[in-house]
Length: 581
Image 1 (cartoon, rainbow, N blue to C red):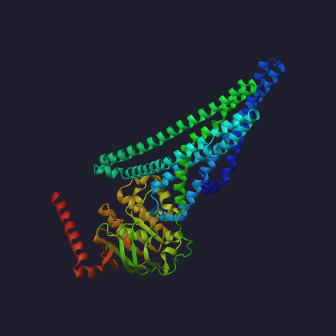
Image 2 (cartoon, rainbow, N blue to C red; image 1 turned 90 degrees about the horizontal axis):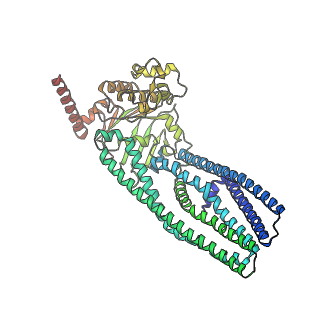
Image 3 (cartoon, rainbow, N blue to C red; image 1 turned 30 degrees about the vertical axis):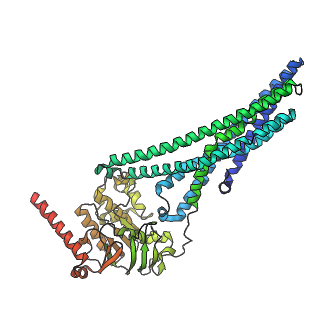
């Protein structure tokens, strides 16, 4: 049960494994010498030749052995801890490095919750694997040979009898292993499923409470927790059964050695001291293998975890992307025959063909689920598994360096995250070396300077900006994005779920960028897109209509119907509010 790739990956931790094996074997060797010493003194006592000198030296040697064993035990614990820490450090660095290589599109391959569990629980399982099982695997082999030699010196027959019983333990481990692989596979799946559900429900707890759907989700999670409990109990039952088998093998094997020794003593083949030595060493003989069996479930968990870690580390990476976007070049974007689907689902985007010219103001509209936000994620590099061609400044998007995309294409969406800290902390993410004057001016531009308290830019913000209104959070996200001064801005429903005044302020800032930047506006409110150079109407992932507001309105097709319906609803809402007043 050794994964060669895992051992090679963690070669820096192997020295600590050697130290562990050495310290454990040294302790065993001292115990064998103490056993010989005690047996010699007992034999001398039976023969009547025991002297004070022998007792003194025997006692002195025993004290010395116990002291050395104590030092070696401390050394073992220390090296075990270092092996564990080394493993955790190496693996988490590997996972983090892989995550960086996969980039912002990593979640196309693995859910965030699974990645968190892999980095925490998965690595912890391997910490135990290397801290306990791996070193004990080698120690048990060396210890068995050492004890066998010590017994054979007194009675080769007793040693041979014990040797015949040794294969019974590995055979029982192999039998249990076949069952354990299936059980632990189901255990890990139920564990990751529960973690994924818990994380999702935790993130959406406010929404669940609003719609009073939390009880149903709680019941669903209870069912998953019960499934996880059931799988955990199966693992524990498997472990207990395997330990019971190990105990039978260990006690039975030790008894065989003792019976052979007693038979030899009865026939005057060996002395009383020899019998005593064999009896004590027979009890010791199977203990390393018995302990190895008790670590079996740790090994299986470790191997299962390592398989999942390697599956993540083996994910296909993009080749080194050398292409870069240039600020001083026209920012033209051309899409040809672009399709996209999430894994094996139906196509979300179908055969998209359009272009965005430099400093053009374009909008994408359509009903929810038509693919607008997916398109925004593709253009910003968050989703890369599309088919077709997307050229920016004449360079294929898949060949452009991720850092270059991040600097030149900024997405400001309805769920842009506001971090706990200060206003300054959040703004400096947009421009690390921004001056106080720059930050204050950008806040004034988006009409957000009113949120300052006496601390100004150092005004404290709670987690997710919970002490700000929805409109204030969107304005802060807008200010942070504008500090980047990128050539291409994507506003993905940046004015949704906020008050009309904040929406008007944000739209005013967006329109102030017209003619200076490339702007792609995704908006549910069609009144915001009437001034765009071009409007694309998406339906089920396809472009159904395109043109200016006047052109689409005059066609009196889908765009016209949506616009009229929305205007009627807004007029009705305004009229209703006036009547209430």
